[in-house]
Every structure is written in C-alpha cells, then in structure tokens.
Length: 68
Image (cartoon, rainbow, N blue to C red; front, side, top):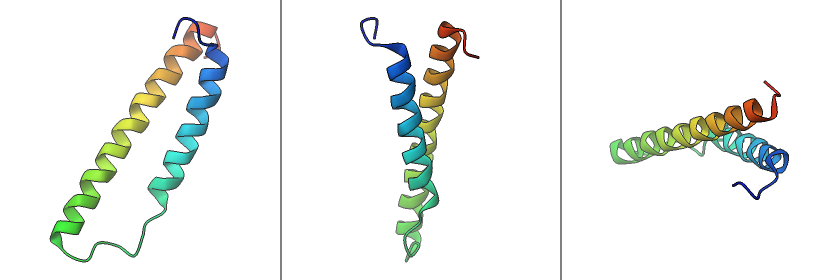
C-alpha cells in the first residue's frame, strides 16, 4: 500500500462501496425456504462486514491525508 496513490485508493474504495451498497439494496425474488433465508442472511452479514472494513480503511486513509 505504501507505493499506491492514497487518493486513487480512496476513489477505488468509494466505487467499491457504492457498488456494494447497490448490491445490498437489490434483492432478488426473495428466499423460497428456510435454507434460502439463512443463506441470504449470511450473505448480507458478510456483505455488511466487507462494507464496514472498507469504510474503516477509507477513514484511515482520509485521516492520513488530512481530509476528515
């Protein structure tokens, strides 16, 4: 990460966050049974964890750049 442009990384993170949030909001027909429901819940939780990790990385980089 030290050789990477931090501002470029911020743009990449912003793009990833926008895409992931859009994916989170777009649901398909919905679960058909309990197993589908459990799988969908697990996937949403993983998705949210990835979003939180990206948001943390974004905040850290922004602090380093003095943008927060």
